[in-house]
Image (spheres, rainbow, N blue to C red):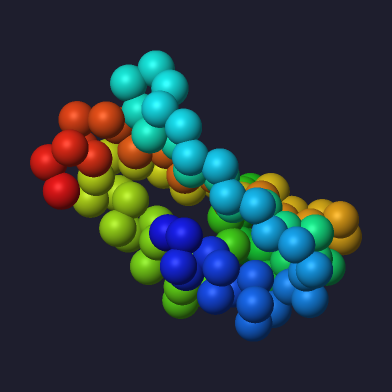
Length: 96
């Protein structure tokens, strides 16, 4: 998740800064990767109208991997940057 997110930041965002936060909270591992880039263009948001779903092979791959672990991915994006939030149940994280 970190590698794909950082690759996306480098390739697309134009960001000068990225932050990674990893915490254990309420029986899960939570990862947050944020940048101060230009954000994800509105036309790249999923057709479902949900702002936290983005069309893209890398993002779809992350969603698929997380689904196998019972985790989930949320993406918040604006012109001020993008934040990718990942949550994986601790039991799933320990078995992989």
